[in-house]
Structure formats: C-alpha cells, structure tokens
Image (cartoon, rainbow, N blue to C red; front, side, top):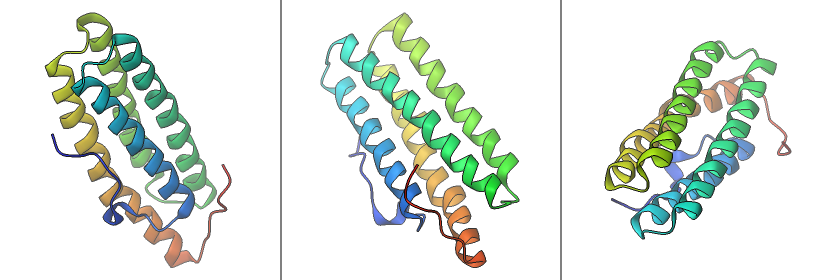
Amino acid sequence: MKEIAWTMDLSVGIELIDEQHKMLIKHLSDLNESLQSGKGPTKIASTLNFLIEYTNFHFSAEEKHMAANDYPELENHKKMHEGFKTTLSNLEEELEEEGATKMLADSIDTLLVKWLFEHIREIDVAFGKYLKEKGIEIPNED
C-alpha cells in the first residue's frame, strides 16, 4: 500500500477545511500503520475510534459552512458523508468481530483512503470553488 499523506492536489483552498483534511489523513495513515505493523487490537481500535469521532466533527463543520453559505449541493454532500460514516462503522464492527486482519487493512485502503481522496479532490474542491466565486471566506476557528 502506498503512503497515505497530504498532497497539494488535495487543497480545497479553504484553510480551515484543508487543516481538518490534513488531520483526517494523518489519522487514516496512523490507522493503516497500526494495521500494517500488527500493533495490538487496543491501539488499532483506539485509532479507528478517534478517526470516527474526528470524521463526525469534520463533516459537521463542513455541512454547517455549506448550510450557512447556501451551497446548492449540501444534501448530496450530506448523503456522501453518511455513506462514509456507515463504511467506518462497518469497519469498526469488522475489527471487533475479526480482529486486525489483512482483509481489514485492504478495506481501509479501498474503502477509506480511495473514497476520501477522491471525495476531497472532486467534491470538496467544488465547495472551495463555490466559496471563492462568491467571495466568501470561512474563519479558521471551528
């Protein structure tokens, strides 16, 4: 599996959202590293739990700013977020039932990493462009 890291093509152009995305990617990388190195189930579970909590925080912040700025794609965006949260929940159940398996590590790569990077590059970047076109700035404090 290739390194999970922030790259400039993931920039939405909104500092608050970019910083939150960097944090999500860091914790996704930590989770992957824990799985690949065979760290104990407790470490893997706590890392996955933090990722779930931070994802919920980030999605709420994003949706709040979308609603406040009349973003026309808000409802579609919410549905995508819900799908990602469901996937995280399913992976958490898989970890509890099966432990830290290679299949779980592969699922992290396929379901989380690819989804998140694609979502940021296409969907979140569109929100950043919308804000820039409207001349809207989001304060860096959430």
